Structure formats: C-alpha cells, structure tokens
Amino acid sequence: MKVCAVLCASLVGCTTYTPVMPTTPVIRRAGEVEVSGYVQPSVRLDVAGAYSPVAHVVIAGGGMLRPPLRRVDQYRFQAWQAHLGGGTYWALGSRLMVQALGGGGLAVVDRTLQDYGYHAMYSARYRQQFAQLSLEYQGTEFTTGLGYRHTWVHFTRMHATDGATGVSYTLPANRNQRMEPYGFLRIDPDLKKDQGRWEAEISYLLPLSRESRAAYISQDMPVQDLVRYNHGWGILMGLGLIYYPFAPPAD
Image 1 (tube, rainbow, N blue to C red):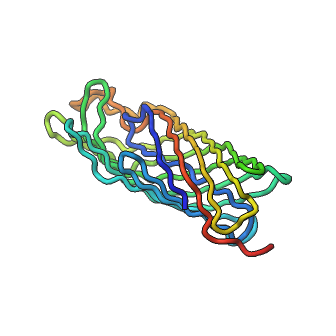
Image 2 (tube, rainbow, N blue to C red):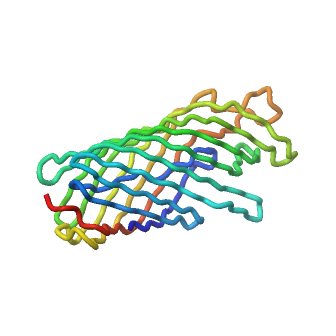
C-alpha cells in the first residue's frame, strides 16, 4: 500500500478542475500488483491500483474523495473523482523502462472561488480523458522517472452562486486541455524482494492549462467578467510509502 501526504502550494484557487497525482506504477513483469492510497492534510483521500495481467500490459485505476470543508470565511471545497485506464510497459535494456497509459474518468467538484474581488460558489461536473508517457530508470536502490500527462477536460455542468446576493447562474460549459509534466523518485532498498517490499517516494505534478475566451463568464451576466473558473496552474508535491503485498509468479 502506498500512503502519501500531499503538500499543495498553487494558484489553482481560480479553477474547478481538481487534478490528482498521476498513477505511476513501477510494474516489471506479469502478475505484479501495486496498491496505493494517500491522505492530504486538508482531508482529501486518494486511492489507486495497478495490475499487470500479462507481460507488457497494465490496468490502472483510482479515485479521489474530499469531504465538505468549511472555515470562518465560509470557504468550501468538496470533490470526488474516479478514473480507469490501461496501457503498456517495455524495458529498454536492464535499467530503463518506458510506460504509456491512457484512460478516462468522471469528477464532481463544489468549491468557493474568489478572483478579482468576486466571491462565488461553483458547482461543476466534468468528464476527462488522459494520455501519459513516462520514462523510468531503475537503479540498485532507487527508481526515478519523468513523464507527461495530457488531460482533456469536458465540463458538462457549470453552476455559480453569487456569494454576496445568493443569486444563481448557469455558466457555459466548455472544454479545455491540461498539460501536466510530472516526476517521481522512489527509494527502493531491496529490489530483489518481491513480496512485502516497501518503498519511499517523492513526486510532483505541474498542471498547466490552455486559456480560451470560453473560460470567462459572459460580460452580459451581472457578475465580474474576469472571474475565471476552469483554468490556472499550480504544483502538487507528494511524499509517500509504497507496499507490494503479493509476489508475482515466476517467469
């Protein structure tokens, strides 16, 4: 099991898109299983898992849950997300491994955003598809990797409630894209041990977005036209432990 504490320092306060850390299983051969879960200090729970049914094929999925959070200033943030995908992995010599994954998911986000002095509660529903490619280097006591995830986000619902008046508005749902480079480092003291093996990990994700005019509230609406609700950038960093509970079958 992988247990991570995620530290977040970002400018994603102007976005309803809520990224999760990429699923980056270090799968070496058929039959290997990796299960993960992490908790953010702000009460966000993530789970993920990966399994290789046959050589060079991996199935991966996960989910995220953040329960309602309220403060004195009535800030609120709650969300859930689920995704499923699959892909392939190939060894490039004895140390390098390349991995490609793709998939999709659903998300529900309700959060308070404040931008240019405007305060509103947003309720969003969106679908997403993603494709990611990573290159991993496996040393004698560590594994490190760099990758890129491209995410297509399709908002199916966007609703806003004016924080000052309580008046609600239906906003134009739109699509946007996220460019998300990431990396990780795992300390792996015993690569030869297949069952009951522990690893420590540090990882990061840098979600960027392509801005478009569709990302702004219409000027015809009685709210600030510069309030942004689905673009922005930030950085997520994670610290964690990885546990491999089962030994894969012998080659």
